[in-house]
Length: 450
Image (tube, rainbow, N blue to C red):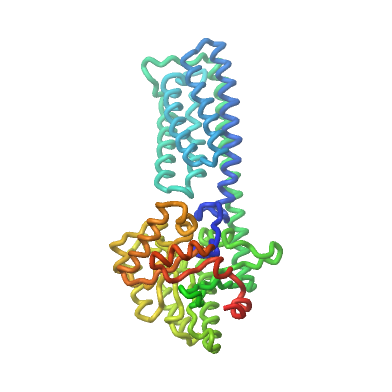
């Protein structure tokens, strides 16, 4: 429910997919873990660097300089919030370094076994913990690569013919040090996973309880035409937590999506919105207003979603044309034909469909022309900077022109100044939403001011 992450005013500073929720906490724990790991890399690297300088093993001195450099690079990138890219680069570099050490220097014999390969097991665990929420293919590739290398070096005495094994006293000491460090890495990974599981379970229980105890509330933000007349509103979800007060939607909606509890919450929102429309139907000055409701991908892809919408509308006895479902571009990822079929069924029933945050996703225009949208919604990220950024201005003009060509209405969200509205009007946009026209308010206040 992307529309819930903002009030069509100012966006959060966090990227949408990381804003709030378990994933944000998970990343923060990862940052702390990598901060400790980078310092550990530097300390251990300096220790071995001194040892190998004393032993005049200049080939290994070079490797340890790279080792220290990896730790320093990782430390610097964490501070600039570049964790994931840095972690990927460092893990790839460490893989080749470990292979070189296993093949050329850590060759087992009857006195000291090979031990460097235990890092492959630890790094496989670390790769899974780091990237499992970022990219499944990349996670599988790295984990498979590390586990494959571990199996090869643990099961064989494979070594380079021109190998120059380390002295036995070094390898005996190294077997203890490397084993301890590798076990410490795996213990840290288990701590992160356990903390993540506990946090998700706790938040999932809180969200379920919030739904059962009526802690959720809908706020309403007006949508106006070029004359400033209120034509409808967008329903925005709020959580009135008994201890924390009103929880910002950016904190709990991503969590609800991640935890798989967005469907029952979305059903509550849909039912509450239809009940509000039923109430407005009895008030002459409100009977013609439409109400926009955000639909999450989880909710939309449920096989019973279309029937649920129809039954809810009929149950409350409202005009389906007064209900507008806002769908994000991410919904069309997957079975496009199934998505189009559901949309056509909703449109045939009379429900209005709006494409929310248009321009920020990845949907193809060849599918857009087949989808029965009645409205395009210009994302506030383009509106916010369009007066100062020629690229954003061009995108806004293009969206409005596209809407005109496809015979769709176009609404701009996040309009905060009269200058922004005048620019949009000049381009042909005729509907607006944002702080310039009103902030989201409880139902009672909206009814008094609309």
